[in-house]
Image (cartoon, rainbow, N blue to C red; front, side, top):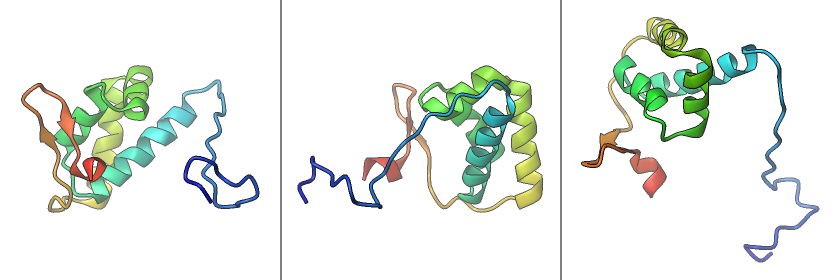
Length: 107
């Protein structure tokens, strides 16, 4: 199968679906999933807040704008308390221009 011509019958084809919702519950659940993943990767609370507040990542930025800093911080605190501190497994670097760099995305 050519790279640019996916097979319509392939059940493993990645498909994205947008589902509009009217309440903040879906955004809160999405933010909680992101935060849990970052905590499990070993990031600290400050690094996770930076990922949400920096504006470089669509999902976390949307959650930060809709829920606000206080709600995001409460979700981070909850996950850090639940999962406990871990040593970092995936480094996050800030470039000289101020952008965040995640090596896993640059590979």
